[in-house]
Image (cartoon, rainbow, N blue to C red; front, side, top):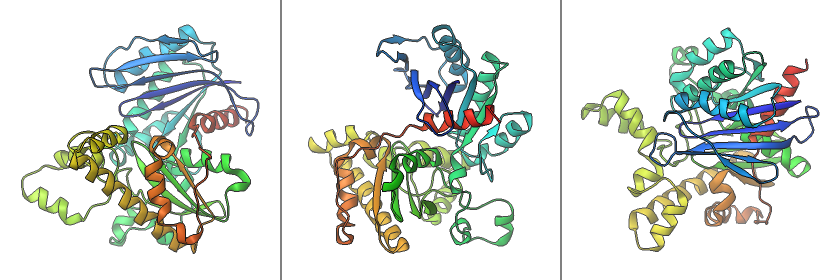
Length: 366
């Protein structure tokens, strides 16, 4: 079965056409495509075939919702026809498994938009574009939150009144599809006590005992936990009260904490770790500070999870920073050296599209 996977983010789109033989085998990539820099003057899109040949694709519009229909139509022109579509959806609420897309599911996902305003609208736009371009194909939604559906109750609840909990205000956890793939790749090397660090534009940690998550840094929304490229991560709630009293609106606060904070806010330069390292080496103090704050929070959280687990057998890094920034990895591991954790040379390149494709195969064949 050929499955077209779609991972729609706030500024990028990633697609892959995968051949899937069964729900456990490694899918074979026939082609992949990515549109990046959406909403900026340097937006671009490229299609890469299995033989390595590349083709630039035109883009219509700027935001993901505007770009998606034309993007999928271009792929339809140049690729063999898929038999199913699979989508990464960041927030699935209480759902524990991938689900076939229908009208009821779309309504459910739209109701969750306030809990993931940077990501949920793009995921829903991907589903709607899929319906428009491939109206007869089954579509499957796969949820980042599903990986954490069985978090211990003491991890799920937030220290708020009971009525807030009844409204669904709790820890959900995110990056679940990435973590699912890391667990799959590690296999027997997973260990009994595992620390997973997904570090990219968004960043989170997860503590696993016997392969099951017992804690994670992100909470009600993907904005909590570690500092990220443009997201603040955890803050003293008093900061928000102060800024509100100083005249900021809730919309302005959301924009500030989601799009202008984190590494970009600390450095005043960029949310990209590579750019910050170059700037720090050239003497930019704020760039150095941004990297130092990120590394310190990562090390502190890794230590806290090591204590929660009672030790660590395996640490795995994924995401753009996790894969490519050896200095960040070394800082995190330095705090765990007393536990016997030592770095090795294995690199885990996360393939969320493999998780999506296997889920779509299972949905389409049952």
